[in-house]
View 1 (cartoon, rainbow, N blue to C red):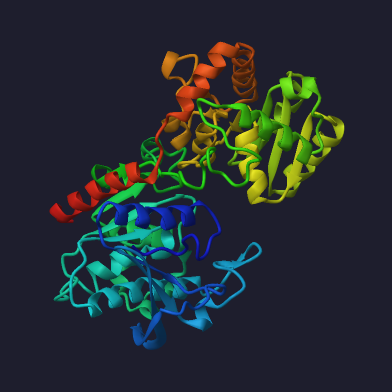
View 2 (tube, rainbow, N blue to C red):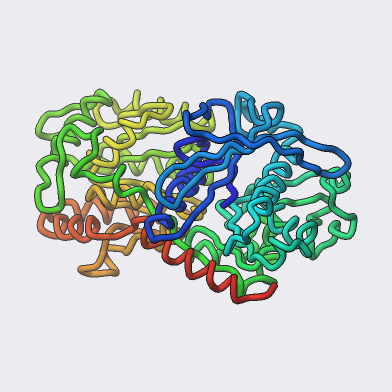
Amino acid sequence: MVVPEARPFAKTGGLADVSGALPQALARLGHRVTLVMPRYRGIEPAPDDTRTPFDLAIGPQHQPIEFVERRIGKGLRAIFVDAPSLFDRPGLYGVGNEDFADNWYRFAVLSLAALERARSEGKAPSAIHAHDWQAGLVPVYLQTRFAADPVLAGVPSIFTIHNLAFQGLFAPSILPLLGLGWELMHVDALEFWGKVSYLKGGINFSRKITTVSPTYAREILTPELGFGFDGVLARRAADLVGILNGIDTDAWNPETDPYLPEPFSASRMDGKRTAKRELLETLGLGVDNASMTRPLIGLVSRLTDQKGFDLIESAAERLMALDASWAMLGSGEPRYERFWTALAALHRGRVGVKIGFDERLAHLTGGGSDLFLMPSRFEPCGLNQMYSLRYGTLPIVRATGGLDDTVLDADEGGAKGTGFKFRDYSPDALVEAVARALAAYREPRRWRALQRTAMRQDHSWDVSAREYVKVYREAGRKRH
């Protein structure tokens, strides 16, 4: 499995959660898994690491690297590609909003090194799974440089798209520097609007393509959410599969969560009320009877248009008129940070805001809120709605991507309902969904039934891992 980041070693976003959890779930199912990623700054040596120097021939040059192998658990190991000039830097992909200018080379080295390491072991893996544009050249090299290799020829590759908006676009002049021929500068290969796209390479050269929810797999075939790749993906639609991400059900468990003031479960919910009190106190909101009785809506998010904060801003006056309190943890676009800070000042006692990120407060928001809002414009999978379900915090979501797949509307699903959804991307639809959720909160018996149903949902990685195994086996039977 070739990834640009993975928990607990390096993380910038949800990709690292997937890359860290999926290999462990596969190993629990009895499979042997090798995780290959860069050795970034901050990944410290371990006593049992083994180091193997390697001279990587890439294009006209040779890149000295070391493979650092580390056993993680039964059936699972990590191999770090150690090249300090490429990966020992202050950021994974860049600093601030500026990408490193040589990312084209850094992640070509990762892709090629992963394949060279697999070949050097002398036994073909049953499948090679590459994630996002940074590993997009893995299927390309596999089908070109290693097409006739005695070890790797015929090994199936699977490519996972976590977010289609990130496409790995570079100038065509890099092709000879990567050891790739000009024939790949073609619409059916790597060419995308006059540039080389590593993402397109992963799509076109892999045997199977996955993305992180069934609905998102359908959405990216449309011009609205295809980011220019809808035609490319439509050509491979028969090989495209949507598999929901799982969540770490050990880290996100209200019965054992160390960030909560006391544990709770579906049958014993007293601890949830204690968490609500602590959340209100932490954010400087009131903890009198009125505050504890009033429904509390939580948000933990990047503050961007994609996450629906333009909708919230447009509907702010009507939302604030509803009988609810708000707990918001996040950071992002400065205008939304200013908006929430001003909202908290205007509605003291009812709106609590923390700009930034805090792991304890993220768990406390998930556990102590009554409702959790995710009004995303698009959302490939989403994790917070699944975390909130575990804690009996009913999600209010826009019906897109993984949000649509994981939440069943309480007014449509009857006894199976787990939250509240709206479809139109409009302030009116958002306000109507929040109002429906607050109305349900005022019906205690119905509310408890919805909470119990939500907390019974199984979004563990073991479920998702079994779906990936099916894809690996199908890829092994298929010829590209």
